[in-house]
Length: 212
Length: 192
Image (cartoon, rainbow over all chains, first blue to last red; front, top):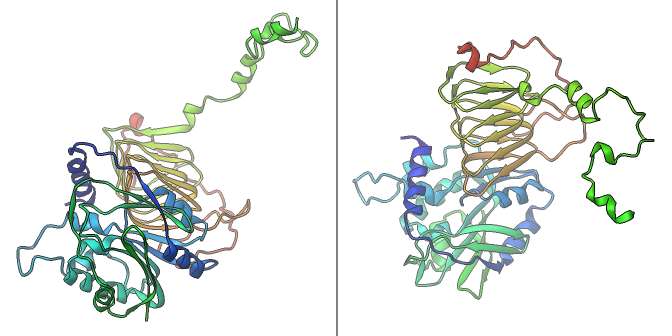
C-alpha cells in the first residue's frame, strides 16, 4: 500500500471528527536549551520522530544539519497488526519504519512525547533500533508524562526559540498514560543514560538522554 | 492646488509633467513599448497536463509545471519546477526552485529552494540550501540543508546520501540539452 494513501486515510479520519479548538501552550524547556548548548556550532544528523513542522525545519536550518523526519506515531497508527504473538510493533516494524542505511548515525534524536505512545516492550525494541543508529555521545530529547491521562494523539511541537516549546494539542480525547518512571526509561532504552532531567510544572518530565 | 494631485491615478499619462518625457505625437503612452520588449512570461513555462503520463527522463531549459504523472528523472537544474496539486512524480526532481503541491516519490534536489506546500507530499530526501515545509504537508525522509553560500557558489547539489557535499565552485558548462517536449502539444514520450 502506498505511503501517501495510508497517510491520507489517517488525515480523513482525523477531519471527520468534530473540530476541537485547543489553544497551544508555550512551556519553557530546560532540556531543549541544554540540547542546543551541546550542539551549537556542529553539523549534525538529527532524527525527528514527530510530525513535519515547517518552523522546526526553519529553526534547524541555522545549524546546517541533516534532518530526518520520521513520524513514529503516524507509522504506528497506520500499522496493520500481524495477528500473531503479542500484536505489538515488533523489530521488523521498527526496521521498516527507520529504513536508513546501516551506517547512518544520528547525533540527536527528537523523540518529543512519542515514547508515551509506545508499549513498554515496543519502547525496548525501538530503543534497540536507536542504539544501532547512534554512537556514544548522541542525545535523545524526550518528554514523559506523569499525568494519568494523555491526549489520544501526540502533541505537535513547535520550537519557538532555544528555550521555549509550543505544545499544540490535536485532540480533546484522552487515553491512559504509561507513566514511565525514570528507572524504566533507562531500563528500556538500553545503552542510554540520563544526562539531564527536569520535572516541569505541567506534569511533564523532560529527559536528555545520552548514548553510552 | 496641492491636494488635487493624489486624485490622479499613479502612472496616468496625463498627470505626468510634460517636461519629463518629450512628447511624441503618435507614440502610445509609456507602458506599451515596455510590453513590446518583454516576452510574455507564459511562454517560458511548459506544462504537463493532468491527463499526460510520461515514462522517462525529462530535461530542458524552461520552467515546468507538472500536473500529470511522470515516472522518470526531472532534470531542470537551471529552472523552476512545480509539481501541481494533481501532479505525481515517481523519481528524483532537480530544479532551481522546486515547489511540490502534489506528490513526489523520490528525492528533491533544489539549487536554491525546495517548497513543500500544504497539499504536497514527499517521500524521499530533500537537498536544498533553503527548505520550506508548510504545516499539514506530508513528508517522510531527510532534509539536507547546506548553509547559504555566497553568490557564485556551487551549482551542483550533492548526492543525497553523501555526508559531505562537494564544496568547490563548479560552473556547469552549458551542454546541448534536448528541447523539452511539450506534452500537451506533442503527446511526449520521453526517452526511458
